[in-house]
Length: 221
Image (cartoon, rainbow, N blue to C red):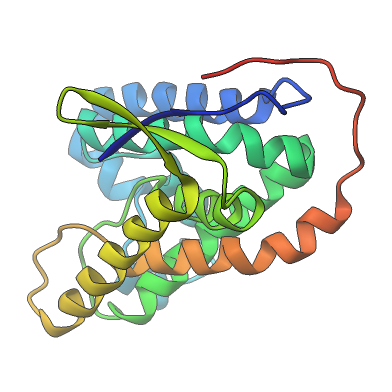
């Protein structure tokens, strides 16, 4: 099942931070393509290099969040951010949502780092931060319907089921990745898990900071 949209009938503000993050990720990807392997090596997060000199390499904690391994990687992350980010931003407010997103991304990176201390493989992608958004969404909107594409049919499925199944897949894949000690790259499942758990936990804090705005917008992705 591939999510393609959700119910935005209760959304009250224009999600400018979500849109800005999507644009920034796309623009950064074009810069990454033009810079090639040298750019990736410099700005991606490399666990062993970071541990050797955390201060000098600290900027990669953030730049890596806006880099992607290919068009499919970028497209998948931005689709999930577009579908789920606007609702979470609506509940938190613009600036708190941005802070929430970045913290989830950092949590995801450190979760992956904990299981790959000696790795020389560059880590990159918005997946961990987006996983944090999913963690927030499932707590805030568990019963909200998500439109998913299954074969040639579009179905309405509760967010709890869609995101819950996604997390179960990440969890068991993460357990499998721990057993695989080969340093060959691939999907950073522990980053997904770390970002999701951070997003779920932080939602208890950030949802309490929201000031309800005056309703301004009714739309559906």
